[in-house]
Structure formats: C-alpha cells, structure tokens
Image (cartoon, rainbow, N blue to C red; front, side):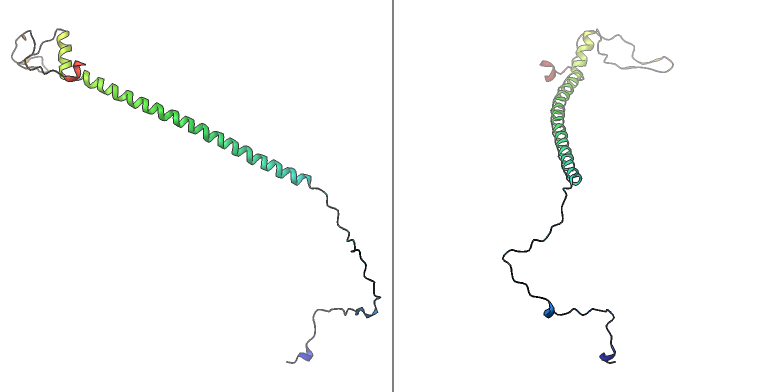
Length: 150
C-alpha cells in the first residue's frame, strides 16, 4: 500500500496566508473584550443559605438532645446508687428479722413456748408422738444474736 493513494477523509479548507491582510499598528491600549453579562443567581444563593441554616439548626438540636441525655443519665445513675444503698439496708433488716433468736423472742412475746418432744398430725387427724403440754419458760438452747443487740 502506498501513501500516494491515501486521501484525507476530513476536508480541511486551506486558510489564506496573512500576506494579503493589511498590517495594523500596535496600540498602547489593550483591546476591550466584551464580557457576557452575569446575573446574580438569587435562587441558588438562597438555597445554599437555607441549607447551611438547616444544618446548623440540626446540629444545635442534636447537641441539646445529647446534653439533655447526659443530664438524665447522671440523675439515673445517682438514683441507682441511692436505691442500691437502700436495698443493702433493707436486706440487713430482713436478715435481722429472720434470725432464729429474733423469731423465738417474738414467739415468746406472743405466748408460744418451745416443744421439746415433737408431735405430728396425720391427714386423718390422729396425733403421732407424745401428747404433752409444753413447759412454760425459756428455751435452754438460746444463743444471743449480735444483730439483735443494736
């Protein structure tokens, strides 16, 4: 293949040389190029300002919500500590009241006496064991409780 047969698919016009154009004298002032008139884009600017305002308002609301949550969390933690202390006090009171010595003292205050010989009732109503009246007085096996002396 030879390049002699190749043709240019894009037709380019031949530009005449500047030899025929008259020469201009250089001037001291630059030529003023007319600028296209630019109108202010009020709609675009207002959308941007409103968008920035919305972002700032959302950030402010999130900050207020976070601070409020922190204050509520602090108050709930303080309440939790207070309730755990109260629970410890109530547990100690319950242990004091459930002590065998305390129960025996309350039973004696109600007029109950300990029975040394056990007796049992059957479903039919029969008594198994010794039928005796308990002796009045204090039990010989009482051990004082340190929690009752407070």
